Length: 442
Image (cartoon, rainbow, N blue to C red; front, side, top):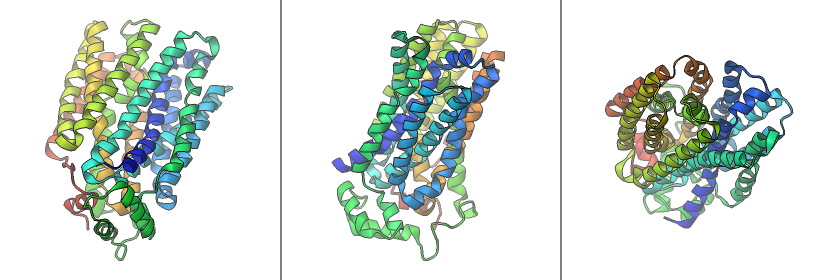
């Protein structure tokens, strides 16, 4: 693997690290938010979901700009938005200002969930693509772990009324680093070819490598996949010829959130408090959940290009069903404690090894070059609108019945298992252009 390729993937994936940090940092502040702004359970759910509203808009709205100014150009914009949300949430003067700055952060998260994996997929040879796109997921879970750890450390410092403001503000440092490092990354060679900048694409392929080992053959295959003599980059996306990848992307994105993963990430400390843990212990258990997430994401990254996407999804689906069923039983029997902790550890491990590692890789692979930005945006939009629904409703539903909440997620994961077994195609080791042909798209 060429060093330039690895470096570009790591820098682009920093968008994922900030995505994870911004997503999870609020988990340690829900009690503070509820007290400071006198929020009901409904309004707490809305406050937590305000970022997700921005994420939905950011994800569906970033596709055409990514085609217009390039994947790297959008990443610069996202870095600025991450910095603004960090400083803004830290200095928020009332509830409305806090919600607005969280919304801005959501725009960045939504955009990053589309552009970071898409950019990495487009610069990576097929034999490395799975693990390099999975670097985004690794950085997402690293960001989640860093948010949990940062919250725990800041809480231990006992900074008083400004404690939670510091939790939000520390994100400004990695956002600035992300912005500066982007100056050293190349544009996507497939985007350059779409814009007729073939000489620049050659230079990128020379630095990052190709599928065939021959740069001219690679460029010819990509030009053929665009087939701009019969298609345009602005042709209709929602049409019959793209139905199969659209349905595949929507399905994997919906199942991702119907597992309840974002309820756990946003409300980790809240869930442990429901089970009887004290505030400090709940934050510490959150760090443990984040660490397990990171370890199993690393495990998945090491095998995704060997085992393939489908096998990881099978293992993850079975783990989901078992762990969610045990969590539901724990709440039903009122046992809580170690049984609940064990079930949630297995749950996060199953997510990290399955859906977490696969979703962004798979969505970035199944769409043709000429509509990939819009396809990635649709998959991400579906993911985030489901995340908003799950995160907003969780406090209200869990207050009525914790066990029924987790039982519902378990039933949904039975549906995912059936989908993986009978519908999901395998995409490992296949060039993006060949995947397009295998899905029957000319």
